[in-house]
Image (tube, rainbow, N blue to C red; front, side, top):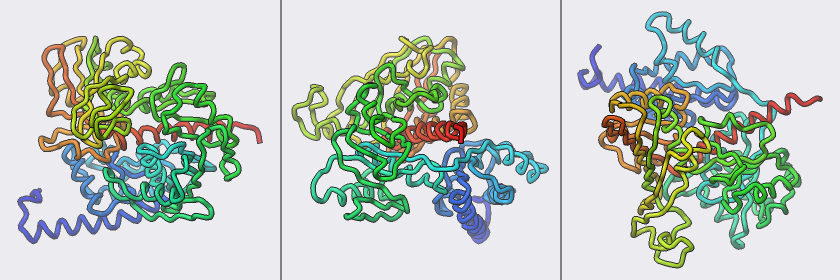
Amino acid sequence: MPTAASLPVDSAHQAWLDRVALAELAVPIIGRLYRERDVVTHVHGKKLVNQSPIEILKAHKWARRVGERVLRIDDSMQVLRIVDELGLRGISLDLGVILGEAPEEGFEDWARAHVAALPSWSQDEPTDVVLYGFGRIGRLLARILIGHAGSGLGLRLRAIVVRRGGDDDLEKRASLLRRDSVHGAFQGTIDIDHEAGTILANGTLIQVIYSDDPTSVDYTAHGIQRAIVVDNTGRWRDEAGLAQHLACPGVERVVLTAPGKSPLKNIVFGVNHDTIAADDTIVTAASCTTNAITPVLQVIDEAFGIEHGHVETVHSYTNDQNLIDNFHKGARRGRSAALNMVLTETGAAKAVAKALPQLEGKLTGNAIRVPTPDVSMAILNLTLGHDVDRDEVNELLRRTSLTGELRAQIDFTDSPEVVSTDFVGNNRAGIVDGLATIASGRHLVLYVWYDNEYGYSSQVVRVIEHMADQMAKARQLQPA
């Protein structure tokens, strides 16, 4: 079969137009399956919901680069039609995995049997979510939750709780949700209602509640019941402080978007989320760096054994640093974040052991804050149990990113062109840069990019979804 590059000019253009036409036909099917049946369509983790025909084709093109088999849009259309015909609900439809495993002969029958066997989930009623705090992570969580609304029976963002910043507070909150210097404009429409104190974003009605005391809010007064409160403030990191949320009417569970103090469970979704018990009312989602490195470390430890290692993070500056030199309780963090590389500490290396106990005492770590607003890198300098080969390690991580159990957490790139801004908006916890991998005997160095804002927020949402599923199952077991 001739490649696109070898086709005559007119034929190449017509082939492109044919693919665009198929992608245009796919858009309404993908959208309807999502809105009506909570079917999330993606290609190796790249969501196709609310994407343009060109973006859908780009996802197929990307899969051709990293996978072992060409993904054709006409094959994807056939799978989508099968899902539609079968009336499937609440499934994660990975076209990359399905088409990558499909046989050459008997494709339709195989695809029909395969998608019919996919695990599904369904809820009879939505789970209310409240964002306590509306900073960088809070606003990205809002964007993701609004984008994940689907049929309305999953997570439902009901309110944000903030301190009033002035008479125009509501306008400013809405504006910060609408515009973002790093992540771009909000994809959709946003309206505010001054009298009701609400923000309406793509049909999601968000109550803005003003309070500086977590015990003072009666969420039931706003129609909120059995909610998960996501504390984005970082003000309280222990059980006693976060338990203040549970004292409020309408709250059932709490998630902290920061590392928590013992005995709270620090959860890295994909690694230890199954340790969340039915009676765990407070959990933490650890840190962005811990989420980025822990899945990769688990894969390497299971395959080769980690004896010890050092983690160095090259981390974008954050709000807790000063823009210009000024007083700060952390001496170096008081120096200008926009002008300096700032050597500081990170607890991520030690925090890994809370998700992977077998690595207790085996890792050290430091951090360098650098003058970029988003996307960071972790350098894993590891000593393994036996000799390894660079290509062997890269192939393991590449396959994991495509079809492994941690494919929602680990991404992989082997492009010689990529730089940090190319990973803005990446929803994986970490992205392994295969070209930078170094292996010599038992010594292995891995470079892991991560969007410390969006990738981490995506992990937090996965934790919330898991808790919501637990809550839904618990309700189903309760006597009528």
